[in-house]
Length: 129
Image (cartoon, one colour):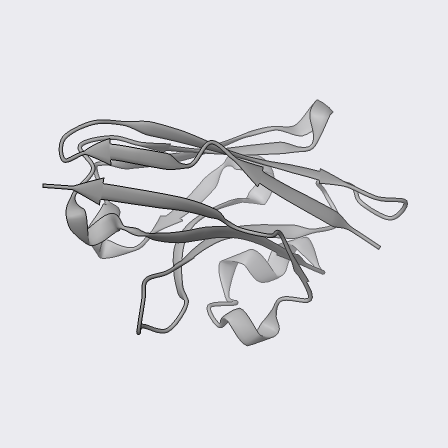
């Protein structure tokens, strides 16, 4: 079992920044076994993949809409992933989730939320104009 806990959401003005954290824990969790991914879901929209860091931190993926503004990083020793979000836009308003699945290499190919078994509770990000 794996437990994921997100934090760091909030309400900000457009152009401001937030940093989200996702703490992973559990008897079977180890960063080199699991793929962890950031998703978000805006009201009335499907959950979409936002950012991924994988291959031991050597590779990243970003949704086109966040490239150049969001940065994903990880603290392997403590099982924490971060999503640094800069120059936030109203279109970034959503509930942000971290999700995990095995194997770790699937991060490079898995794009669907349906493929992830473990989810955090989500953290709300609201950006006003």
